[in-house]
Length: 402
Ligand code: ATP
Image 1 (cartoon, protein in one colour):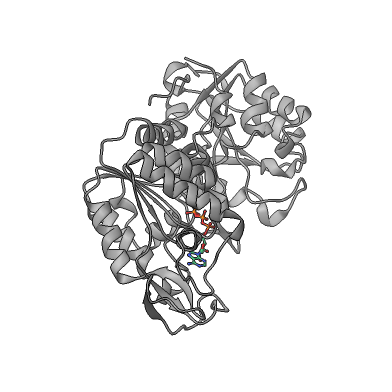
Image 2 (cartoon, rainbow, N blue to C red):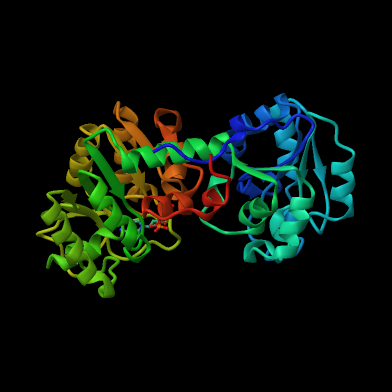
C-alpha cells in the first residue's frame, strides 16, 4: 500500500517556517532519556528540512502533564540530546504556554536552516481535545506543517490534526511514510505466508485486531494472557489463568471464522504455570509446565510452554512476513520471559520481513538486543494496533492528498 499523501519530498521549504510534529515521547529517568529510539527515528525528516533551508520548528508531547506545565515533563532534555544527535544547536523555546511570547520571539529570530523545539504540547489543556485556540496558535507559527509523529497518529489532537487543517500546506514526514509503508504492505499485500502473532494481557483490547488479521493472514498465533480465554472457549481447564468470561462467545466466533476461512489459528499446547501472580512482578516464582490436557485447577498460566514456543518459532520461521504485537507471557519476570524470548529469537533469525508493533514487544526486542535484526520496529504501539484493526488514523488522514 503506498500512502497517497503529500510528503516532505513534494514540497519546497526553503526560507519557510516549517512546524514539524515529531514523537519525542521518550522515557525519562531523573531528567535522562533512557530510550532514544524515537529521537533517532525522527532525524531523517529533520535533516531533510534543514538541508532544504527551512526554519525548522519542532514540537511534540511528552507524557501526560494534563494541560499544565510540569517541569519534570519539559522537553528541555530532548532539545539537548537532539542537538548532539544532529550536530547542530536545537534551541529550546521554553514557554509555559507553548506558543507564548517567548516561543513567538524565538521563531521570529530564526534564520534558514536553524532548529528550535517548542515546549511539551500537552502543557496546553486544549491539545488533547483538539481545541481551536491552540491549533490556531500553532498554525500562526508556520507556513508549512509536517506530521512525522506516527505514535500519536491514532489521536486527533491540536498538534497533529487541528493545525494540519489550518496550515496552508500539511504533509507527512519520512518516519510516518515508513511506518505506513511497512504496516500497510504487510496487511494489504503481504509476501506469503503471512503470520501474525498476538499476545498481551486482554482479549478485549484486541478484538478488532484479531478479527481483521484473521482475514489478512495465513496463520494467526495467539499467546499471552489472552490465549486462555480462547482455551476456555474450547472447553479446556485453564486453572486461575487470566480469563474474560464475557468474551468466550467472541473467541468461539473467531475459532469458527478461522476454520471457515481456512486459516490456522494457533493456541498454546502447553504453558508455564505458577501458583499465584508474582508480587512484585519480578519476584522469584516456581514454574511447572502443564499441557492443555493436564492443566490443573489451582495453577495460573503465565507464559507459553517450551513445546508451544517451539511450534510458534517454527511457524514464524516458515513465514515470509511476520507481524508481532504483545508479549507471550509475563515477560517482566525473568522466569516467565522464555516464551517471549523464543519468539523474538525466531524472528531475529528468519529472512522474513519482520514487523514489531510497538509497545511492550518493541521494548522486549530492543532489550534482548534483537532490534537491528528486525525489518521494522514501529514507534507507535496504539497507532500500529489501530492500523492493524483496519482503522483510518486521523493524524494521517489530516495531511494533504497527493
Ligand atoms: P504491546 O505493548 O506490545 O502493544 P500490549 O501493551 O498491548 O502489548 P498488554 O495487553 O498491555 O500488551 O499486555 C502486556 C502485559 O500482559 C504484560 O505486562 C504481561 O505481563 C501481561 N501478560 C502476558 N501474558 C500474561 C499471562 N499469561 N497472564 C497474565 N498477564 C500476562
